[in-house]
Amino acid sequence: MEGRGEAEVEEEEEEEEEEEEEEEEEGVRITPQLLKASTGEFALESILLLKLRGRGIAHLGCLGDCANLEWLDLSGNAIAQLGPLAALKSLAVLNLSRNRVASLEPLSSCHNLQSLNVAGNLVSSLQQLRCLTGLRRLESLRLRDPLARLANPLCAAPAYRAALADMFPGLKAIDGERVSGRGSELYQLCRDLDSSLGRGGSGGGGTATGTGAEPPRAAQPWVEASFWEPRPPRRSSIMEEAYKQFGEVLQECRELSRRADDTIAQAERALSSRPDPNSFVF
Image (cartoon, rainbow, N blue to C red; front, side):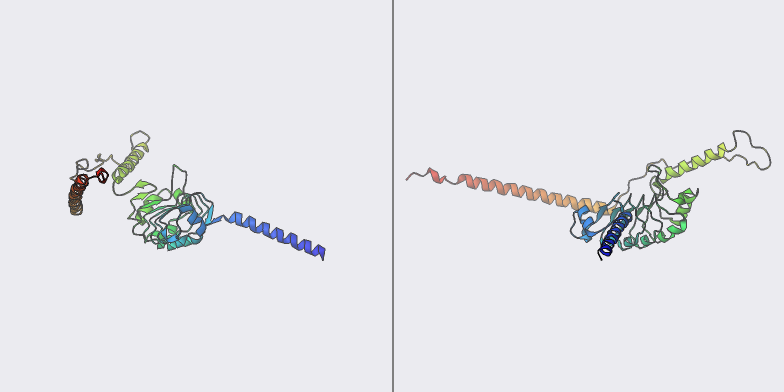
């Protein structure tokens, strides 16, 4: 009986050690206590900005309870499943770089998402990104970060950026480079210059001969003729009305300040005219 009891105790100890090892391998789970300690907020609904970079997190846990979360940094963890993020309807900025994410399907419910960084994950095909095409506010998508040496298997395809631009016509930046809006003209100019230099260098410096040679094309300007002309300043009726209201409020504040100064001066004169009770002699 004593031998059996010792054997059972040893088995229980081994099971406990195995469970502890599994928990260590599984990584950190996000809990209400972790969120409150990281932000100082008592209610999860009050958390608007959350930075959990490099915490060894593998499970998002109760993160979906942060219903009003707008800015989230989960970079440098061990996250593979994004299920709880589907509940974050207010999320606008999300950094998931340097994780183990292969499926972005839960993010299709984050309709307010504007900026997404998934550099350094396991996205291997454009098909895995089609779930994001319904995000009409998405403006910035990063799959590769050369400075941090982060990428996805998809980035090995030479034309993946062009395919992304076709799939997401509303994007203004791909991998941190502007493709539309302010700054995109310079980006396109550099691309055209690179392609022109590439075509020029492919001939080996000699004159092309034979029936398959194409005649040189006339040089075209890089930008439109009116590109460098200063643009007239934009006038907004909303801004003009705001300035007008601000001026009126400022004038009222000055008038109230003047009245307060007059009242204080009158009170000081009234107090100074009163006789000093200590001056009376009985």
